[in-house]
Length: 88
Image (cartoon, rainbow, N blue to C red; front, side):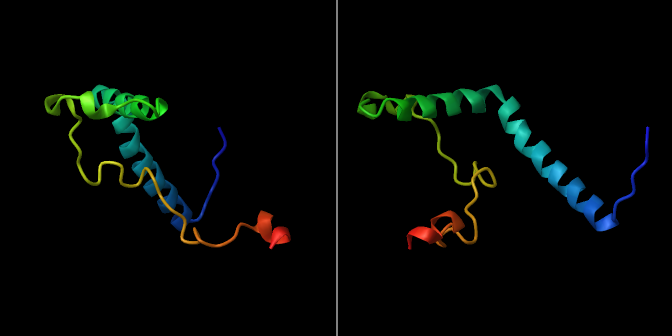
């Protein structure tokens, strides 16, 4: 096995990214989380489905911040993608 040297700051950055990914993976290993995610996806798969029939006791609990870091918006979200410059 060959040893490869990389700068310390790159190593620490990769180590941090791995740690963050490991935290995110835990959500997908949680059976309850996956069941709730599947229920959520099923509601949006059938756009004509009326969800008013769901009893209050059956509704999924909503917690702010549960999906933090799963969904991110780029800093340049409102800028025009380079691919569209020819059309402007």
